[in-house]
Image (cartoon, rainbow, N blue to C red; front, top):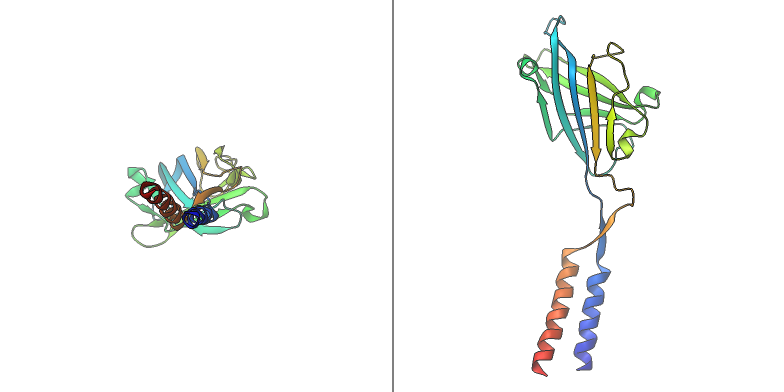
Length: 185
């Protein structure tokens, strides 16, 4: 009986020893309105709206290009443009200290594309929240009436402990061993 108890306790100990850590994915969603719409010649023909979402395994702390998980453009823009395969993020946009997002598009006639430049308050990429773009209309590349960045999934308390599947299996086997031994006794 002592052998069975020792084996069960050892199995439970192994089950808890396999606890790992998991970081939830971080979602960056950009919604914008009133962006300047230009035809293929560069002539201004109106405004458009849109949004995209990028999901990363952790908060963005270095410049990079990320593939969006979703991207939509209003119908008038979708007739001319598609969303870029990647969207640019830089926590120190052009050395400004501001968080920067480059919203990339391509022309459907494959003649080129464009980038809308959006700046947000420093630290916007590092904390859950809703942030408004800081660049004014007419102030830079790609005019936007408004742009809002929603950040979700950054855990201020760090990663949480999550038991690994194999560890749970070992724990379950130990508990079954206890149960079987008890029934025999």
